[in-house]
Length: 338
Image 1 (cartoon, rainbow, N blue to C red):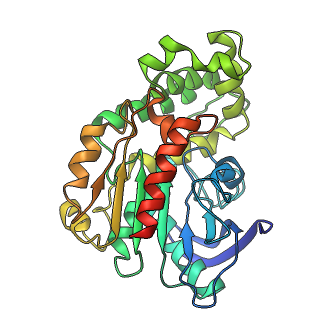
Image 2: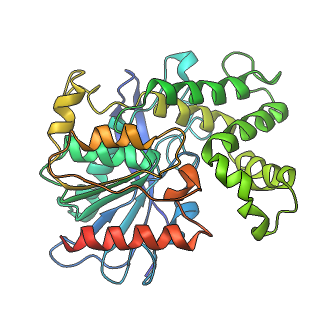
């Protein structure tokens, strides 16, 4: 059973950037039924640019996450346009105004919602891809006694310098548009969206992907058609302020950079007690296998299992990609049985 999306309001949410939101909204959707002991819960945070309806395709009896066995909750991250974001709350700004969200803000809001709305203390699994994987690492390090299992697909617990260059390029592409006034967009950043989408597409899939052109199987008739309809059109659906807000969150991802660990990334990683699956894609260009393997070594007993795929970063969200979906489904099933 799937519910309609719900909204949880948090009064006076103090953000890491120093701003307090008088009424922060956390929008979430649930799938399946909560057991009487409240132990069958999977938390599935959203990825960059995504809302819950964009990523719930993998929830189903024969998919990666089974709602007939688990109660699955997708919380929309702050800044994604559904939960409190620059587009829907005048108290929100961007980094130019000294305002940003962090994953520490996200997980504290999520933890409060789980406890107050559902009485949930223990999570059977935190499952996340990309920015969702980042939130999973924050959960595992900050609530080690509440997370039994953690599946981090194509994401790291700390944004690398190389990854930051990619993010800065996206931000620069949007804010180079004439509609940007230094703090806000005064109109639609048409040229910004176009440049942004092409940068994103070049990093999100591998060189082999573009050589083999699997996108032609999905109704695109050329590379340009794929870039326009498969990338640019999708991101044009998102408010550009929200896209920047989520970049600002991603740039600041570091599980150690919270009041709990005071900058000690290694100590934060060592706190993870959950049975952890670290699953990069073999051809991911910004959450590289080497970076993910290095983090797996910091987590006691972690399983490191790269997805052998030409799909690059998108192998971790294998919509229209049955081979990679099957690989992930088997690995997650094994994790849940452990």
